[in-house]
Amino acid sequence: MALPRPARALPPALALAALLSGCTPAVTVDPAENAADPGCAPAMVAVPERIGDHDRRETTSQATTAYGDPTAVVVRCGVTPPGPTTDPCSSVNGVDWLLRQDEGETWTATTYGRDPAVEVVFDSGAVASSTLLTELGSAVERIPAERQCVDLADAAEGL
Image 1: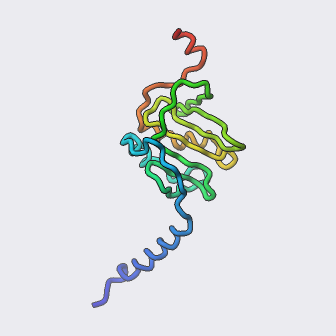
Image 2: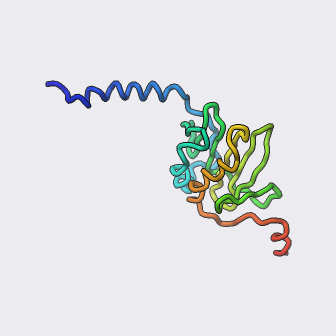
Image 3: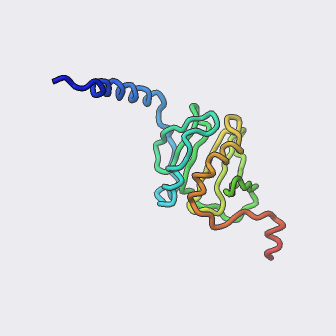
């Protein structure tokens, strides 16, 4: 008995998909210390498939994702929420981000006031922080905000 045509076409299509998926290896990312926190799940399933010109890639760890080939952005959920700090804070569409320049064009953005916290390490030469933080915002919003950034004047008023 002959198989219907779609069934015969399926194995070559699966083989092609397997071949193409093997072209870009998974990005090795160390998981955050609290990657198993259930609060990460809603955010991580909502991250976009693309940020700027960079497609989402598979990673080797729970509650992580990456973008670009070569990798331009790494996202980790479950980092320890930062406490009060003097690091610059930007509020982008209702999500507060602490920003820190690492080496060269590498920056780290960490959510402030959300537990678990989300950390994003990115190459500012490959993707603008405004694009990145805007496009990740709707996913990160799924972790409820408990606090927000305040500036020095606001903090002084509370004394």
